[in-house]
Length: 367
Image (tube, rainbow, N blue to C red; front, side, top):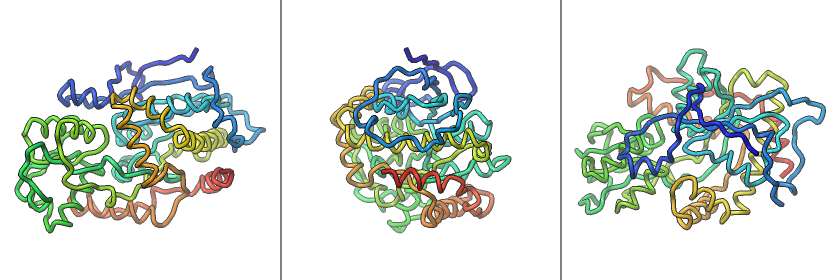
């Protein structure tokens, strides 16, 4: 039997409630960090046909990884834990502790405190995390390419607003220091408006949803489950960020891991399994939609639709570092500097490390 422990990144026991449930039931008040740990090596899950047919691990057969524990962060729900289990990928030669957080910023805070080894976030959390002591104790070693759906500016049912330009002088809720704030700035610029032309209201995803449904704000810039819930409550899309955002999700690792041969080898193996998980979800969309819906309190048909449309727009994929990816993050950093959210212009290239380029290239060559 698989042993499961509910705790946060610092070992405190917590109860995890899916974000959508919080939004609809608790009125958007929760902002807690949660975690779930699994001794992956002890899992008895049967591998699927897709997983057993996948190429062998890239980890060196001579490496003894039995003493290694990788601490893996996830956002929102236990996606990789559940996905690896379904795909038969939990038979790792090292131990894995999966932890769930309510935001990428919290994952990087855990890495800074040496409580986490691995996280995939949007482009924004690493920018702010790099301003912490010791540059946040992390490096970006690659990019996950993914779709940019469910990132929207929405208006409540019955709103008289017809365009972004109509939002001048209006109250707009947004999630600070996230893609929501970035794409809202870009949408305003596209409509000939500036940040000073609106009344911005800083709220969490759940609080923003509550404010929109309750008529306290004129629009909401948000993402993920809060956008799904907004539409379920009659909200309409005013503008989509699908073509504004890059689809780059930086892969961040604990800097101490990079030069540790055993931990480096273990993470390389995990990255390979991650690419096999990507393939499994694409080849088993209905099964994955069922698992996702059950864990996120969504309708299975809506999840399946998102998976299909997401794969059509930009399939899940792992990539090595590129100049374009660094330039994209630099543009975001410059935008936040212009808003006065960063003390001065920063050069994001110092965050990135090519230490895993050869490992990732070797993984991609096996596909």
